[in-house]
Image (cartoon, rainbow, N blue to C red; front, side, top):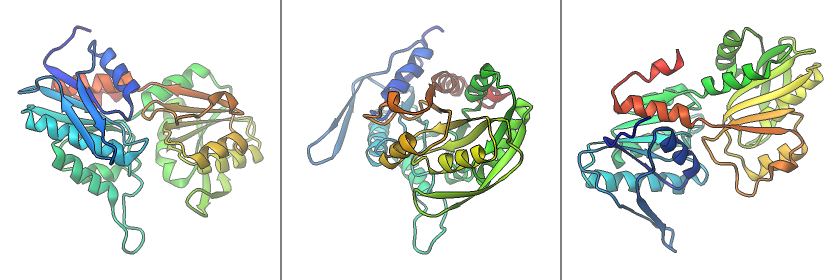
Length: 319
């Protein structure tokens, strides 16, 4: 692809490898920016190239360390706005705080909405994100939002595996609609695991609706942090006679508890994740008792960036 000087791409430090891949897909290098964190924790940045009148994209995932990641995004966009950028698009591959999307207890915040307000206030004219935890988060924004899905990348990988007797499984009822979409595209059956969460990181799965006996289970979820849902659902599928269990998640903000669970408790054969979030620092993939595969969404994001800049349809990517 020919280099297009009409737009610029900057990145925070949350997921620099992904940003570099996106830039490479577009035939560009990341534009220069200096980001520092002072000893007292304050964040500073200086954009080192002129942005006046330019179409600018800022790539920053909301994990790891979401508070620092978002603060970097805010100060970068503020610097770009004060540098007279024509349009600023916040590219947030993983929207941190997405699970706090409703008031389900007394006196709790709706932090996903707060983040949306802050992103807009900091200077975003447009937002590009991927696989939101809840679709209603799109309504929290008053600027245009393009919602990508990792589905094309994941579907290609699944089809390449040529599973003998595949069945798509939703690890909880909340993921049933997404799992149904995958099952139709793959021409496979559908099953749903009913679960009850017993704590912040513990889940009791108690039934499987559908027949997984002798099947290669394709489990679909938007994210896993503690591995609780996937582990409980995998165990239930195994107990019902599943031949193999392959889990596919868009985002992988792994916690220490999740790492321990994946190392010692899960009955997965394979876990497939995207690079929307870098793998947890110090996470030794070689010690896992199953196969971990990381797929890149850089071409997907890169194509969306190109289409946004050229005022073309982003939705056509999924047809």
